[in-house]
Amino acid sequence: MKTKSFFLLLCFSVINLLTSCQSGSQSSEDIIAEVQKLGEANKVEETLPMLEKLLQHDSNNADAQYYYGTNLCRTGKLNDGIVHLSKAIELNPDYGKAYGNRGLAYYKTGEQKKALEDFNKAVVFDPENGIHYYNRGLLLNETEQLEAACADWKKAMELGYQDKNDLYELNCVK
Image (tube, rainbow, N blue to C red; front, side, top):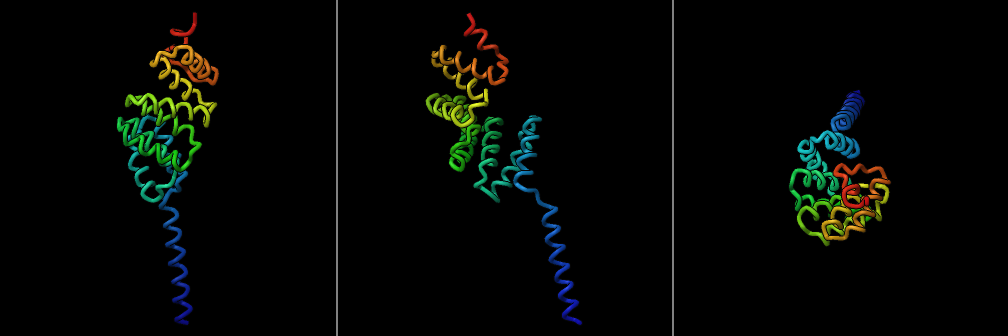
């Protein structure tokens, strides 16, 4: 009888422990979804500790690396952001958005050649995302390749990207 009671107590304890562990932790997907919502609400600073904790447990999570790198860049930590975006690309070599955001970080740090390489890969791996064409157009315009810049800005608009600066209208429409 004593053994049976001990066994039941042990079983209930294990079940209770498992249940409490599951209810107290979020999945990686849930954390990423929360990070996306906070990012859309421009609460980027709030995402950084969440992503740091996630990366401590799973440094090979390409999405966590992507969002951490992107949000570091959004807070002005471009070089740190580039490191994490590079890790996301290492983990997922076809990660178009990661190439696009790393390209933008390179563009902002004045590394035009690296930026162009990344923008080119972004449009290959994520061809339906107009922001990549728009950003590459900015770089091409800056390097006095207006015809190519106009083609990219036009493509960005065709894909639904809104050119808030009217760069296509100002520079390309005659």
